[in-house]
Length: 183
Image (cartoon, rainbow, N blue to C red):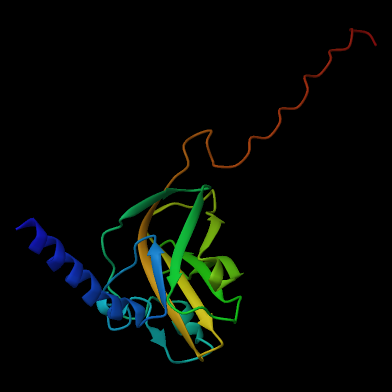
């Protein structure tokens, strides 16, 4: 029985591979939305055939539906975004990561011109902004094939704890020397 369960699971995993590789670029972390025609489970990271992306596309998550956040980060802290590419590309740079703190605000670019072949990018979140409804947007502009790939992740960005902003502490000024009275 265990032997058949293992082989059944292996066959199911292999069956999923073509759908994941059809996208060329797949956001691995943070977990992306898996809804909408551009970001459904079978088309994670699918190519959008307009290059360069329009301003409206850059400031959206296309038709994907927001989901409950799966990851939480701290304002002022670092986030390492991870992705996979299924075919090596020769056109770096091209990856951009942006954040949106609420649905009515624009995306703020946190990192741009990252080589797609790096497969990760570590970025710093602004220390003064937090949100329970933040969205991290991952975008790869592929000049090689004339399209771009996008994925969005719903995340929580918690306020930095008092005294812990994620930034290096500043050195305290030296104590002043009191001068004798009358001088």
